[in-house]
Image (cartoon, rainbow, N blue to C red; front, side):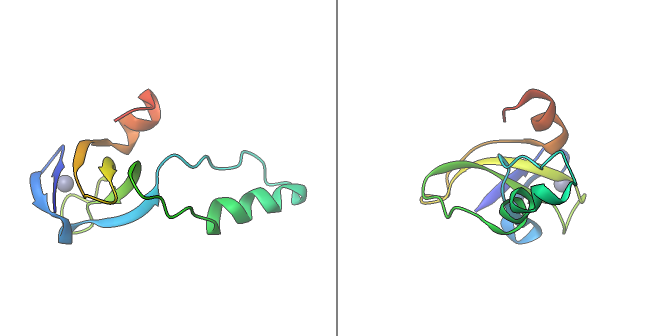
Length: 92
Ligand SMILES: [Zn+2]
């Protein structure tokens, strides 16, 4: 699988680290009664089969955080953007 980094161009996936679902929203409060929300945010992940948005870190390259629109079954990649742009626009 090859990922097209917006800064480095198309690179082998071995240069990247996948960090999972990019659609999760960080809890906004640190109050003790939100610990269940934090537990789910930090530890609970669905193992989706199909198209999803994932965080990838170009750890062996420019060290940018990216969001990859990818099918986890076929590994087809539909788009790549920076995490900054994804958070501003909400899409890849
Ligand atoms: Zn890069």
